Each structure stands twice: as structure tokens, then as C-alpha cells.
Image 1 (cartoon, rainbow, N blue to C red):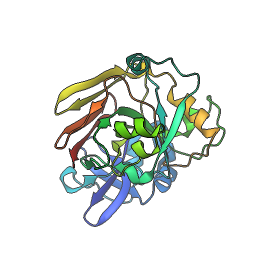
Image 2: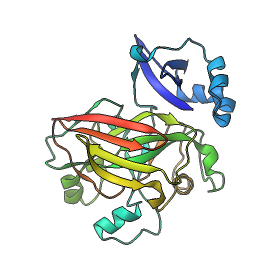
Image 3: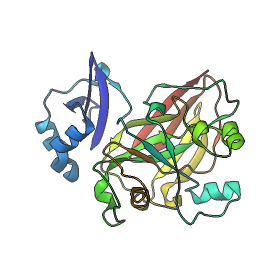
Image 4: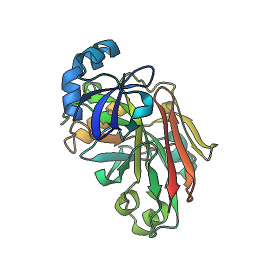
Length: 269
């Protein structure tokens, strides 16, 4: 099931996308949507979800997709792909390396990544993200999948020169527009064998599989929830594979994950 957040007319809502890409509004908040559709989401039953929706479908040409959720926080993971660790010549970490990105960095599909004047080197980082579906505090790895609503594409945009200059990552990861998310949340998804890639101006830059992940989503949710409480709608970025590189004004950057979709954004100064 594809859960989306869309704008149509003067309205914004969470809802589901049908096979013809029409949008069925369900609720004003993600928590309300999950509450209304919990059984349908668990069974991935779009027909049942549609029956419970309040409104008729909005045609594809009549809405604009927004970032698929409004997180209270974004927890990101560094150095979580084996091929990326080899690329950097670094040992695999014993535990996840986590950091935060602010909610103000979030943009949606088709929105513009703005290059800040403080940086001369802004990089793309294609990532799988997952969205928390219910409150998680000290959740075991075995129970972690039940707290994950679904998965989406992300781009952990990074001011690489500032990251190296500061010696820590907060400023480099936190500029407005530095966390594109979308195009929707896919609730029926497994990582095994799935390809993740990025392309700049249709030229392939990153190409890997989620089998290269060092720590899997259920491990990450368990680890992170032992540090901080994760709330519904919070987002976890799971790391980037090898092949990161610089963005320039007027570039078009796309992140593609098999089984989810394509997140595309343009770049501007």
C-alpha cells in the first residue's frame, strides 16, 4: 500500500494512492490515518482502506505530492553500507553511528534543494528511509518491525566541506531543504535483494543493493529507541552506498529504490 501526503486545491491530507495514481484522502494527520486504516495497512488491503476513506479519489493531475510525513525528528545513520566503508577505507562500525537532521530540512518530491552560500561542496546521498508507525521506546529487534509503518526514498544532502571543517555533522546536515523525502510510504516492502541508486541529470552515480546494509532497519529502530523515544511519523535514514558526489545548480538528482519508487529534486543556488 502506498501512503502519501498530498495538496489539492486549498487542502492538504494524508491518504492512499490507487493503482491509477489517484489519491484518496483519509486524515489530517499520520496518526489519524494509521488509526483509521491499521487493519488494512497490516493486511496491505487497498480495497478495505479505500472503503474506510472519507472522500472520493482525487485524479492524478489534480494533486501535488508533498513529503510523505511530518517528522518530529529525523535520525540518520552514517557509514552503514559495506561498499561505502570500502570506498572510504574505513572499518565497519561495531554499532550504528547516528546523528540528527531537523524537521525544517524536509522537502518533498519535485521541490528544490537550495545550495547555501556558506558551502562550496554540497553532496547527494541516496538513502532508504523508514517511517515510524507507533511510539517506540526500548523496542527489541524482534518487535521492531511492528513499529515501522513503511519505507520511502531519501536524500541526505550534506555540505561536505563544512562537515570536514566542523569535525561534527550538525551544520553540514541541517540546512533547509537538505532532507528530500518521498515520493510516498510503501507499507509492503522488504529489503532483500532491492536495488538502490542515484542519478544526476540521468547519469548513474550510485548503484548498490540493500543487502550491503551493515545494520538492517529492525536493528536500527531497536538501537535508536534505546537512546530516544521515536514517535509516529519520525523518520530514520539508513545510510548511503558508495558513489556520493557533488551537486551543482540546475542539476536534477533522483533516488530510486526498487519496490518503492523515484524521488526527484532539482538544485538551485
